[in-house]
Image 1 (cartoon, rainbow, N blue to C red):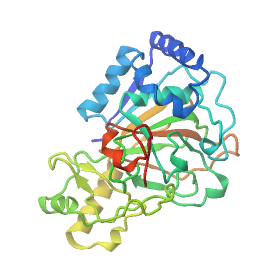
Image 2: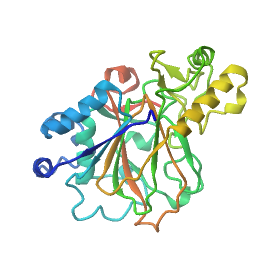
Image 3: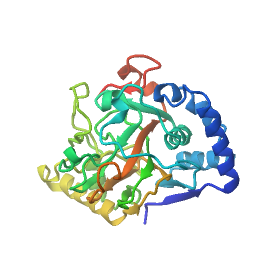
Image 4: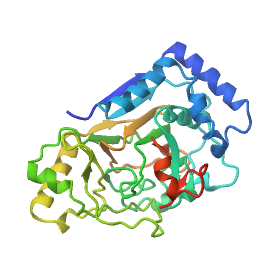
Length: 324
């Protein structure tokens, strides 16, 4: 199988060091403010234990592992509190808990946390919970009744982030996150060439209230090196039936590859996972959520390796919300 999830278990000694760092951070009452915190998270992350930093660097540098699953972190000792039933990050005075702070530290070892203007007012930390009012909306992270098919996060966007991170606060439903790497996809030379051609409408998910800033032009599904390509796909919005001949055959082979190489990960409270968003699609099966306040709760952040590539689409140098 080409999908490889590396397990990174925090040791007892590392746990003590991480907890001391989090206590130091939260002693500053400004730090739980997400906008203040992310301007310091990259420097603070360098105080994480060396083995942790080395593991994240190897993950991003070598491009072999599909995802990095971190367990045993010293967070949520008193529990996360009730699962939100609204997008709390849009509310004034929103503050991060210790798991979200550590999420920002871990992810900052991979890149810069960013948001999108079309998504929760540009918020960087985004709540993923099954919202009762959106339960029947397909292809939504706030839905639950339908499968959320294979997709690259923000696939339609020209400067999407290279990594997506999920921090789990609660998942008593044991709903799995599915990850599948494009590595090893078996295509003929003709099919490979077809997927490298800009002839596909990728489309955006309902989580983005697009304003027309980004024209959803035809794009290639594969890009980068031909011997080990990167991928941008959203099978929830790309209509395979709209294509025929070689392009359709190539798309169907790619979808079959993702299905056959899928790996499922059931996150527990205090777990973190970081996915290579250039090489791996992810998905989520339908599930029956627990009652409001008790349901599955994740926090999502995407991390870009280079802020300058999006500078023309941000209001200022310090602003992290990318136009979409």
